[in-house]
Image (cartoon, rainbow, N blue to C red; front, side, top):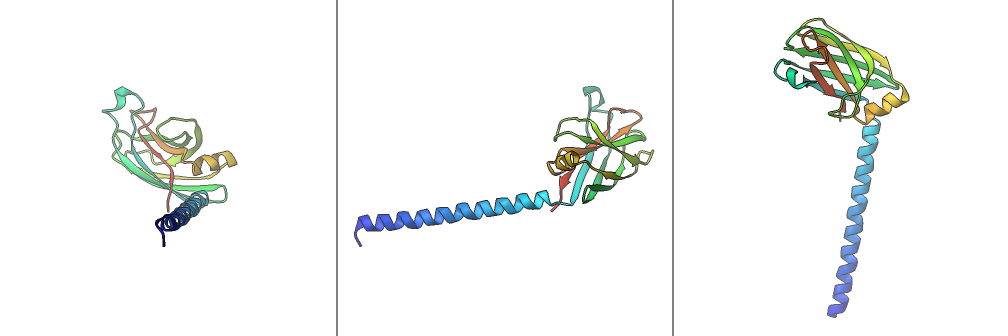
Length: 158
């Protein structure tokens, strides 16, 4: 085989391998995107989220919220502990990660520093899309931090 034929053969082999690698990446991406779009389990880790510089030293606590989705019906259960004062209310808000947004729905929360969260909510198609795009978050408000003490964005679980 001449050097020119060897180079052409190597180019064809490289081109074929490169094309196969691209195809594998596209198929994998499409499968992952489809799984995220079909996800029916979501989770939020609740952590102190100061709403003003003055509150950064006064908020405490942690928690977790778990969501299951059946059609457009969202069912949420969760728990929180160690808040600086009693929970006064809790909501699901619409806003992308690290950005505040409007209230979507009220949650039932124990009026204590440690407690539970629950809700069963019919989401609109727009809210369902926001959930699947990680643009819904859980926020718990407290007596000493009425603007919000704990917050966590809902992310799809594998």
